[in-house]
Amino acid sequence: MSGGSFDVKYNNENFFFRANCLAHDVVDVLSMVVDCATEPRNAVACSVGRNKNEESHLIDAQTGGNLRFNDQIFGTAFGNKGLGNPTGGRRSNISNLSSEVIQKFQLENITNDRIVISATGVENHQEFVDLVNEKFALTGLGSTKPQREASKYVGGEIRNFTDSNLSHVSLAFEGSNYQDAYTLLVASEVLGRKIKIMQIQETQLLPEEIF
Image 1: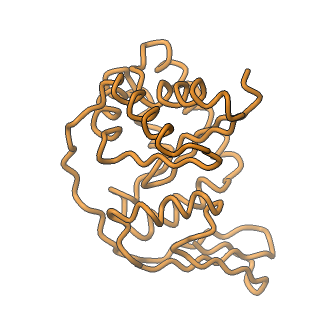
Image 2: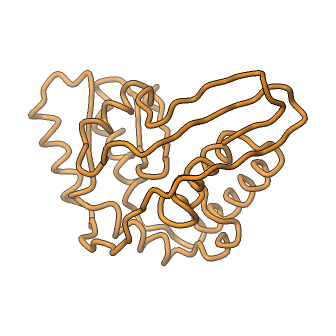
């Protein structure tokens, strides 16, 4: 209705709610973003989520797309826990996506100390800051910090043999710590995720895909 756009993206460490709109619609659009991120999920929403998750797993199993490619890289780097878990979750856990589980996730992860808000095209910075404070003051953000074991880089190699004569070779290695590096995360999103921790190289020498 605002003539803008809205989407949600996520990776192994972060998720982003992003909207583009006309300047005079920023209040309404920001309210929509906050509601989508923080409102409690009911049984109907969770049922829709389970169905979509099931469909995503089926499609990925048939196509072997980028999601599986990314999951295999992180699984090889960090093992089968922490950052090594599949981005879309494990198919065996789909039935466990209840409203209680999702709300617990929201309360543990969408907290004041873990939220970064950035905007471009704002004419009055302080006015936007006041607007953000007002919107988030009306939400019941959680304060519980989950206890998680830090992911440890283990490394390794995985090869998927295919019938194609084109090989995709990905080399990943342990780099800088992203903890508290909010500036790098924002820059990475603004630049279209051009900042990466891996180098990808293509060759046609071997009839296989190496991750």
